[in-house]
Image 1 (tube, one colour):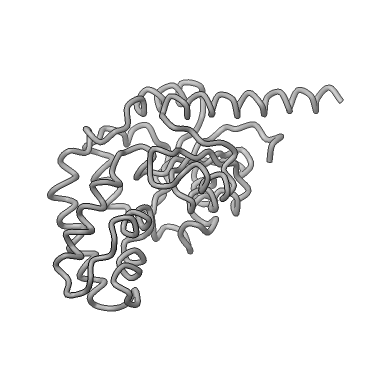
Image 2 (cartoon, rainbow, N blue to C red):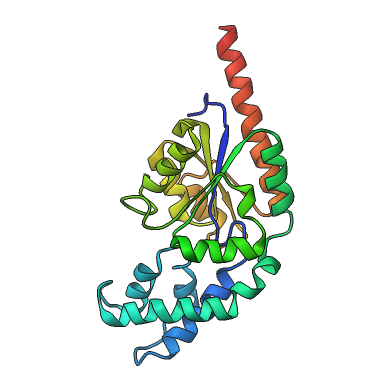
Length: 237
C-alpha cells in the first residue's frame, strides 16, 4: 500500500468530524434509564459509540439485536438525539475541520464519509452542520453488505469515488475504523480526540495518530509526501 499515491480520504463522522460522542453517551444513558435493566457504567456505554445503534443497545441491554426492547431503544434514541443534539450540530464541529476539508478538496482529493449511522441520521447532522457539500459520497449503515470493521463500507466508498483501495486513506477515532481500513487494503490515520486511545488505534493498525485536527492535517500531508517520494524512487530505479 505504501507505494500508492493517496487521492481520496474517507472520514468517519462521530468523534472525527463532529464532537458527538459525549452527546451520544448522554442520550444513550437517558434511554437506558427508562429501561428496567441495570444501566451499564459510562465507560462501557462510551465504548459502543460508532457502532450501529441496534448492535450497541443489544450489547448494553444484553439482548439479541432482534429483541423488541432493542428496537424500542433505537427508536427512542433517534427521537431524543433529533430533539436534543441535531439543533446544535454546527457547534459540534471540531475546530479546524471545515478548513481542512476545503484545503483537501482544493488540492484535488476526493472526500467521503463512512459512518455506522443510517443515512437519514447522518444527513440530519451533516446538513445543519453545513458540511454536506464537502463530500463526494456519504456511505452509511445498510449501504454495504456488512458494516465496520468489515471492509465493505470502505470498498463501497472507493467505488463511489472511482478510486482504487490503495489510493484511499481512512481517518477515524475508533478501532473499527482502523480495522475496516486494514481489511480493505487502505492506510489508516487515527484521531485520539474521539473515543479510542492512541494505543488502541495503533494496535489496531493505524499508521499514525493525531491529537487534534491540526495534527491530523499535518499527518495527511506527511502521508501524501511519503507516497510521492516512494513513487519517485520507484520511477528512478
